[in-house]
Length: 169
Image (tube, rainbow, N blue to C red; front, side):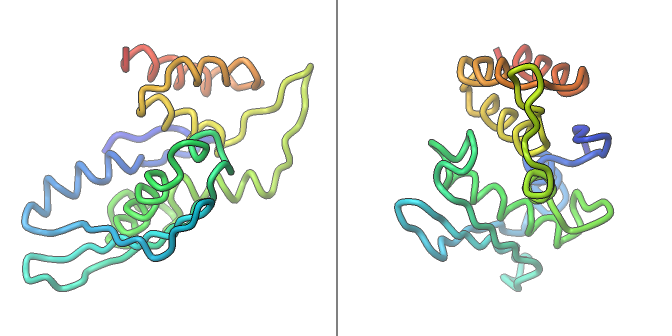
């Protein structure tokens, strides 16, 4: 499966996990259920069932509206994608050294590391990079380019974003 590098570690994006799942488990199901939804938060449970409708794996995600770039406009969709990623990781798809998805790792790192200002810019962390990549996949190229100017990023981060932008056009 295709991976992206986040802080030197390879992660399988949810879209790649879903694609792989659909290729190898054609008769299985991947469903989502909204557990809680308010104006500012969402909790979704994803469930993977086999051809006999037996639950094989689940994943739960929680997102807060406005907590990240992508969550300003798409916190429900982002929550569903995160739940899918967790369920697929629990099934063993895209699983590396832990169950944590790239989103979860990104969240943990952003909690651990406060944003560092450098020459008027903020150091790009894993969460920001993932959110910008999601923005690109949603066609929000202009917004992503504008956001990129606010961050000090590594050459690898800049290359990843630029390649994604250029392949999305």
